[in-house]
Length: 458
Image: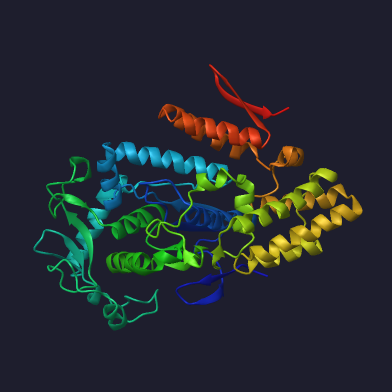
């Protein structure tokens, strides 16, 4: 069976093949780095981490690009509120993003472009759109995209222009020709700091959000690439606008497959900063080890809604512990994956059907049962190898299960880094709380001139 992927554009599961044999080019919209990442961000990062892992396991070379939005209204406001430069804020948040992603076992993409490094490419694309009559200069100095002049607008969201327009409020920017038009280049405001202003043929200013991804994706992956991914909330307007810009400028299909991961919900509402119902990755890692959090996300299908609660995470923790207990009881042999093995074949079939991780995880539990019954080191090796394709079960079982905490080294290091940050900020109460929480979980911290290390508490 060949790989099949649900394509948001066609609204169907279709056979996948790459445009260049053996090589998949994939772009995923990353974070706007004005604050710490929350669990919704973790879901997107983990979902596409699993995608690229399975593509590699299927024999593809993968060029994976996940961008960083490091210029945005929220970033400007947060930096001004904090009294720091834009670059200082975004550097801090990117470093925190990497710490959180590393703790969750998320492999780094091959390219992680920052929007501010691609302003020339954005200006070039805007110039092309203006020449083609798809962009216009408004009286307030902004460059806007003329949505009604792009024949394919609405094809990703499945809505007509009239349907989209009916849902629009009257445009605040009276210089727009149509409420649906969106900004490509924002004219500089006198109150904005100088480090968010660039000279351009359209006047001093900064890029709009949508043009950033179009320019970075096309520069790094070409005018047409295989997979474009992101959260379901980006389908409209962000991804719809990316299509309009890129295809309007280049005359080529932007992405052959569009993939969107589902939301994480709290009390049946999407987790988001705007609703104030979000939990940062670091919040969650203070209560649960990183692999439990990853397992909680991986065992649900990437397109489904996922309900967050301590009950669900505790259930995930217990389930993961059962898998590790099987591996502790029967040490795993090194095995080469044999896809003709019945359980390995079922795992592959599940993953080949739109990355069906729930069924793949069910295979892991069947294997754990076999390991417990047979004591076979080879079956334990298959369990570990298949788990590794999901980014699971690679920690030493005894280390994972020690002290009943399930905290792996990556999760502990995240807490050590958080404590160091608290001490640097002279928040000694928070630093003491982190130390005490770890001690309660059987982890003893030891400070020295060389840094902080840990060991199991006696």
